[in-house]
Image (tube, rainbow, N blue to C red; front, side, top):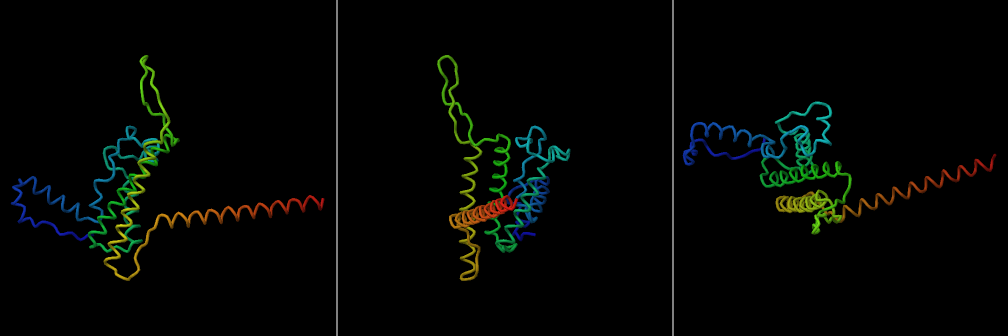
Length: 220
């Protein structure tokens, strides 16, 4: 459970709430105090075939989509991401600032997932966008980067900034202790180096196969 300081019920008179509103407030406090309570508003409502991501939804294909309820796929992704961030960053349950930043990360990751679902359906990073209409009513279009791709890039940049904020807050708390380090440029270099090593190894393997084939022909 995430530790949170709630308003004592004795203080709620300040708000002038009715009995119905007080009962609702108690329930809201229970939801917010739960481990994933801060994330309750993130998952979209399932609309079956009317969902903008219906074409990529496995639950609809398998007849398991719960119409009118929160999307189980997003809930599962949200819970997995929350747990992964908490463990990777070694965040304690009472670290309010870190938890709010992780909530921001999870929200961004879910939005990125939605962008990827849109791109999976459209299957093209370019889309024809109307820019003008001729006097005879003909629409003039030009190719532009898919809006979902542009939005995803912005989300990735925002994710990097939040990770850097997390790094900063944990540095302040830990002093000289080991903290999570995130450098997008360094990570990109590491990935490129791994890709280069893989391609070199693959080419070396192809050479060995070719030499073996030629030796077999000469033996014949």
